[in-house]
Length: 313
Image (cartoon, rainbow, N blue to C red):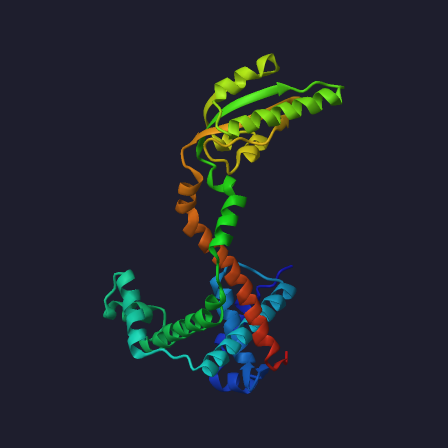
């Protein structure tokens, strides 16, 4: 049976007088030469619970959440200490500009923002300190994480080439087809057929007219213009065979259901270079975010490795 720990803890904290709270407050953790008190931890837990008041926790789940909250407080303390060591600061001009930006985006006057904050029990000086902390945190991450991340043009192009199916799912492609029946039970004939298909492919790649190449195959092959097709609707083996091919290029011989196929791309609604330019910034942001996540974990670990952290609860 789950106990309503959220309501119980809220009740206990709200009814505790400042004097009692000060008396009961103990050390939850030591981070270098600073402490995190049990009172600070309890307040942070209440804030976390208030974000999802509909959730209920059993004792084990609550204890796990409390550990996670303490871990976050330790991380915040390490970040604050690193900010001080680096001498990062926020000027009054930066702070005023950030608050003015909040007012502008929300269509509020300065007086209206003050009133909106008051309804939440927050004063303007408290709000300014909060915004200042957010700016400092952004500056810290920019210096320690974002500035360490570099995505090269080669990485972007390689990602595009390797995931081209993700970007051509709605695109149309025009194809020519040449197909051969694969003989059964005769490996020599199969090997001969594969050589014939390779020779046919070489002719197409060299620029020889498709209809002439098909006619030269005689009765051993069939084929023709397949028209314009939605690439995402094609069978997976066919999509893979033509992935990345530009108009005029020809797939490797592809075996499907006792048939050997060659596919020549004759047109695309977007050629690869045009499509690449359209999605390049999207790929850069994706790769950058992946690298930022990795660097953030590394940086967080570095802070912990170089700090004296002692958990007392």
